[in-house]
Image (cartoon, rainbow over all chains, first blue to last red):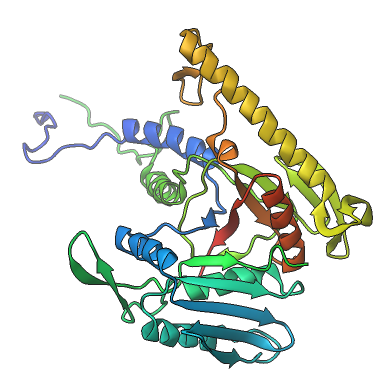
Length: 180
Length: 195
């Protein structure tokens, strides 16, 4: 006797996933993104700061108390000159194996920032023969504390309290542009 | 009496076949996630020139609308137009003002011209808007926008400098000095994302 053929039905808890529309979307999206993507992400060095830091910078511009200058030379290394209340102090970060010692520079700037939390602006005066990549690196080292646990107090006038920020010297000014 | 059918091995004798797309879907999913992650939402695209290595920085600021100046080891360009040439990590003598060694003559002329053209375009655009008869064109997304809209960055004196990382600061200083003299004091340095 012939066996009755059972009609194949899916269990009510099972279903077949139709991947065709998903694939169609992906096949269209992938080429569009491949064509329009920029694989080298270019950013710009500028200061986009929290409101409290911006206000503190404005206050410092109105009442400049301390002036910090970074001089960079491929011969003598980096000199950080701090002028405060008529007195001037120079800290030198010598070259290390023919290169600028960024680790020591960062630590030195962290310490200086700790001593002068109200200062946000530094003047950068590299020599003409300093490579551009080193100039950018110096601005990076000065702008923010790499160690997120090292923060500095800044007074937030809106909230009327002191907040912590990892920004050190975000306002970098090249002061030797107009020098001869 | 029914005759029993002879047993046959199941084989793919017909022309239809089932396509297993699971691995392809996996690959597409990974690609899509990667591409969406690297997709930039910046309003301005800054593309480094050929043979130009931009310096690495941990800055996270997206480029803004501005005039783009590119400095490679051999050329100085404004928006892909060659303005001056460099030799041995400095500008050629003919391009530098003999009375002011930081002043790049062709760059100053080009920047002045760009600023003047942008101001004229802005005046025309504002006049058209005030008259209520702006010419409309389609943007990249197909939306209708008024034609001839000026670049606000140029009007505001902003420049983005794409400079090769191996150039000396002296070359950059000359560019910054000349740009400041031409009415572009707001300079932004283009960098590549890195640590």
